[in-house]
Length: 170
Image (cartoon, rainbow, N blue to C red):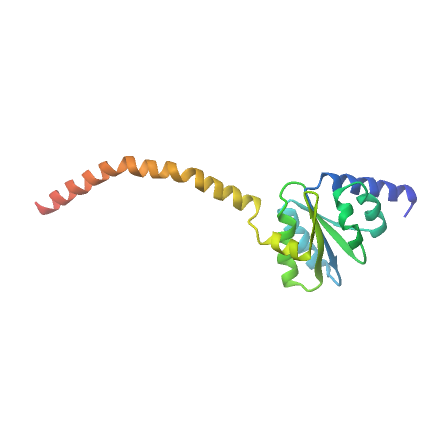
């Protein structure tokens, strides 16, 4: 690889690391193509980018970003799961995938500028994702409105039940 190509890769990776809200570093060994494609598909569905790293280029790219906190983990065959929106998505997807496969090991991560270790990534993976939180918030918001509608409709329902009971007696 030419030096100019390495510089371009380093700048692109630095831009990705700068914009990222969360990055999870994982070590992978002996993955077949089918498994990698499944992982990439799941990550893409979760709006997470999977980037196999060249360690020296990644260390240079990490300088001046929050990912520099985990640059010591750029050893061996590693990749980064990068998310620009949902901070939990990379941890959740990789933790689920690493449960099934022993060939992926989560090393560490950076979430909004804070370094977390492998146990921290596993704990983060257990939290509800952005979509789940949105659904819960909508449920909480809609609950009072639903109760109000039921309360308003109850006198009419009670009257209808009384009339039906009278009609059934006759």
